[in-house]
Length: 402
Image (cartoon, rainbow, N blue to C red; front, side):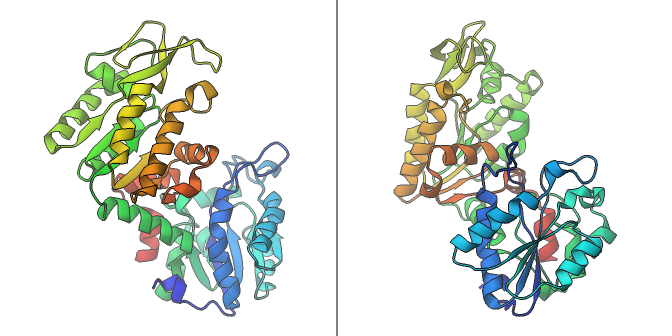
């Protein structure tokens, strides 16, 4: 059992770092509450034990201190609703600051069974700077520190890493979300059943070099889709028309292919592409072999042959990691490839494979296509998950383990 599950929070104020960095529309309505819903079980356990909860989070990237646009206050009614719907009757209070008198008096008056949400941490530059005295002021608000924000675990910020030093070992721990994120990532990285297929998509090779390199020691198959595939095709002498290409990464792409061959890892590049005459939802489209795209055309999705090729690889896999879409799935005309790959991952999961989907766009895709509950695990951390799979130690995790 984990420290969190064993710990009794009775009469304790638990200071939880959550990741409530959720998208809001211009009416301050939440358009995707995945990250908030993910934190509910941790909050519930503490309240059930007879403790109270103080939540701290950032929202967006405020440049000049407090601004209404980045206030966490609009989240209060929805958080209240989520807890009520989950069967937890509580009151969610709001502090107009995260430190100073508004925060300290609200925390001091907090009763067991209540929840207090602090104002945006990033209204202070000290948060991102990892300022020690700012972290200490936050630490004074609670008796126990719980880090449940996997999405920010790769940042050495005051509330994610620096704060942990102000709590004794038995009073700092991961929440349930953080535990399950780490356990799922560990399962893929260190306990993966073979064949292990990594599906890596997205626009740029440069964003994914480290993850591909680290996976060459673990995966049996690596599927490469999205805009980044065309850099590999150009590196091997293909014609890619106007497709996205990082010309300064051609040697890197070549080196990765060579390294994969040496290690016996099969790299799968899309046989064909759906091509367009411009980057536009209403562009004229056609198909072409991915290594022979006519001038003036660009690849915006994988083609039918590639879908079949990739689906076959996914279907025979026992472990699947998916990070990054196969094309510009935001445009209906170019979403078929990403949707087909999502379907293949779901089918492999139904046949017993362990599938982990992570990275903002892949998560958006499985949510959009209604597949989120049909894969083994959907990670809430984009950058954090990438860095974890690159083999880096994440400050937010290291701070608790110290």
